[in-house]
Length: 407
Image (cartoon, rainbow, N blue to C red):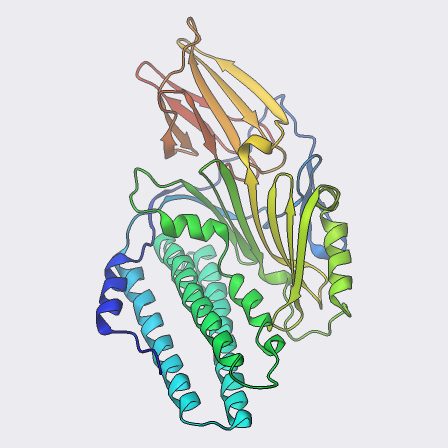
């Protein structure tokens, strides 16, 4: 029997879905001078575009240096919940119509055609998510839309991708009812949907209140964007490069094996420290998903076959597993501030202690003038620091200290 979604569930969805509202934004600071240096550099990597090539951890895709920078804190947003609910109701209506048509015929060929048509509609919906994302990123980069509107798009796409995933699983049940129909005909759809289901978005969507939610660093340009945040002992990063994507170009990769070879070239440390690997093609033309588990965490790399470049990258890294590349301490009137930085544009840990006693000090921490959290009673906090130069401001009960780590 077809499974219709009751109107009550749609109403509950409207009231329950999380989204984000931005608390503040700041322009990227002017470059600062200092004696500190990093051993990592931003370098071109064949046709893949700029990569941070790192030692002792995974390489990372980047956005162009002229990126716009914003810091956000997720909270409930009714507007995004309504839009997401509307998206799901429309999708449910389409799927309900498919279920009815499927049950009204017993002809295997007709049922196979219905599955193919449902798959094609789902693929078209993912294409619409891609286009919505591209338009919003470019509009935000040139100032046409606000930070809040951009972030609402991110969460709306994530919510709709989750609804698509549920329909994809349901579609599998119907595949099993058609003799001779191959599940491989719909399987690539899962990888396409997952482009909008990064762990970074999952954490943002799961945040319920501003005082408990992580601070999210967003860097955007007309060519792409980067989301990064720290939560639950993990560092999450999502990067998308529109200029690395050529849907209509001729693929230079002949197989998944070719895509895996490209991934190995771009992430050599990951392959040397790999626990597992999963590879697949997607319904999106010329796009290959390489999913790797390694000793620091996990990596999803989407390689465009035409450009042979990484078009999307999702990473999750354990904070305790990342090496500390630089440690610097600044002493002021009453406090000592220590900054432990991991390689590249990875997270940084800030520690604030009493200069005389060495006891931890509670403090408010700001990045480029925007409050991103407190150190708490233990005196330390992990930060999702941006690429390039930035300022950290530490405000205690006794004084305010500003430091500008050199990159």
